Length: 131
Picture 1 (cartoon, rainbow, N blue to C red):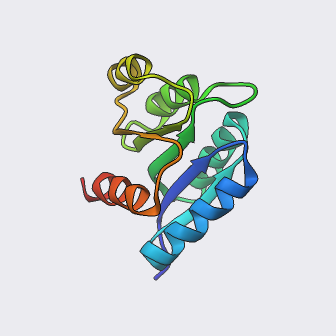
Picture 2: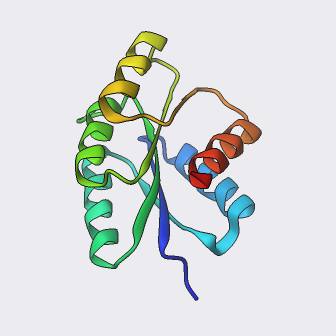
């Protein structure tokens, strides 16, 4: 049986996307589909494609500062179209007040400040997927 739930990571840094995908695959195996997008616009397209394939969007990990649409605006859009997905913001630029506001507006599950360790990533992802 193939995975029918997806984890989507959105960041404009390709090296970060690849390292997160590799780490999650090693930790969670074939239980999930691991999608990547370099922009919010590409991520919205991936979300539509996953839905058309009958794949549930379980978790979105998004950078905050990206060209085009910022991560906070993107996660608010995701909340509107996929209210069941858990949302995690990753940033080295956003402050606590901004993240608290986003938590209220978009139902943010967690905020991870960059840089973070693999164990921090695994902990947040495990908690998000367990709910």
